[in-house]
Length: 272
Image (cartoon, rainbow, N blue to C red; front, side, top):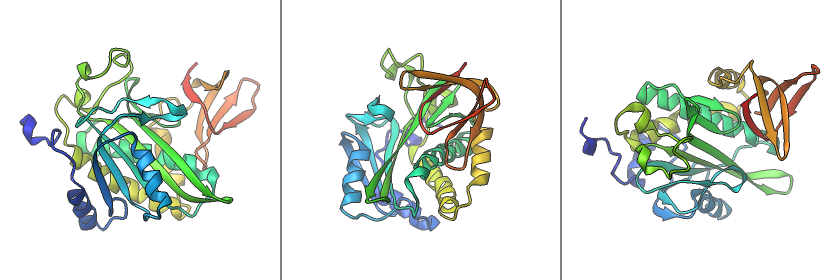
């Protein structure tokens, strides 16, 4: 396939995304804001959510000047290289299930990548997708509250799609990768986005029905840390044990040396 035909250098158009979603009868992406450069798609989506924009509204940008990761970390988001987007979700759920949505989004992306590129990424709790230990995708869910209930959730996703290794800053090159690097060819961003939205739509529908046991099992199959000794870093602490996967709320289950089960809502998973 010629590079120019892969759509990697074509700007993503709101009308084309909306038409594709409508054709599939989907909810996610019915209303799209396709922007050139923003500080963060999560920031734009949060403003739209507060203005009452409906569930499924999608904000996608060609570039983020201050892309966000967990713990206010930055996410390198150069123009026309990746998929940088955020969705407004309005689930009827409690705060304690927001973490599970992050995991379901990661599963949807892994499924879509495998379907479109025949590549099988691994998932690391709570929000990273990797190939051979190198990260190509992160997910960030941020909830907006009204009283004790969730008014809406902004689900932000950043995927390194068509970066070459030289496109990454030198400090990221040992730990970052892209779909283009792994596939050995340019990747069509619009087709990949369509597949991700379709995959997540099904998982999100089941989430709203309370049917996510199967998705939890599928997530665990993609996580190579399951049933292995691992560490979870929380603030300045390190907890060691055997990682037993996740529970129905997306929390990490770590079997400690003394036999007790630690159930953790936050932290960084790594190899012991």
